[in-house]
Length: 317
Figure 1 (cartoon, rainbow, N blue to C red):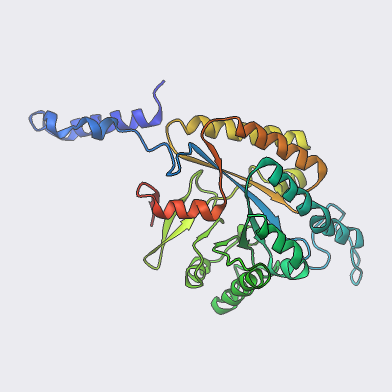
Figure 2: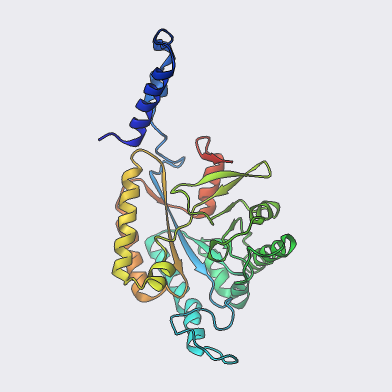
């Protein structure tokens, strides 16, 4: 079986032969390096496959009676107290447990932080940064962002980022909108505010650059396939089903990385990925990946910087 690259090369030659007279198809017109040169398969740091782990820091910033595992049938005027305690688990147990596990596994992650959650638990936010992880912005709260007027959205993004910087000392360069639902002005606002990348894109399995007002802006793709809020909460996967799905994804991307550069994303949320069973599942997943040659775990700000410096990076209009 021919792979797609070989097919496209051969199809290109055939197509050229079909439109040009035979006497114009000289050997010099079909340079071998043009026809057989492989796609660049390794990243600038020598990695074969980049793995990017997200740790969402959202708990404490949610509105009253937010979605939770409990029936959404609270009567008006009452507070869903068990639902509140489910979110509290995220900052009381979930993130501290995950932080210890990242240290045990020897990897650094990107934490997408809601500004109001950071202000409610400043010591935990500082600890995340002090332990070497990236603090990325995730809005000021859980408000719907895509429908905001330009200046309102700009303030919303700026306030969230400034809360992170004030508390942790880390200036966010990456952004994640609530449920990835950015608006038509978001990228322009992010660039104006000095951000370097966003993750609200599912279209590729590798980073790429887009043009925003004529300037490059990095996209470090996110995932809903390897995401605990989608699989564990949304589809009621068990922890072992989650392990199986993520490892299957990894195996395929690792195979593809023999011929093209690949990036894999995995996402964990404070009150879900920080449970004992999910941390055990995460350990199994990461340990398995670390046994494979050429696999590197990178923060998303690092991946974005690699994209900017890479002359072979994909560029989209």
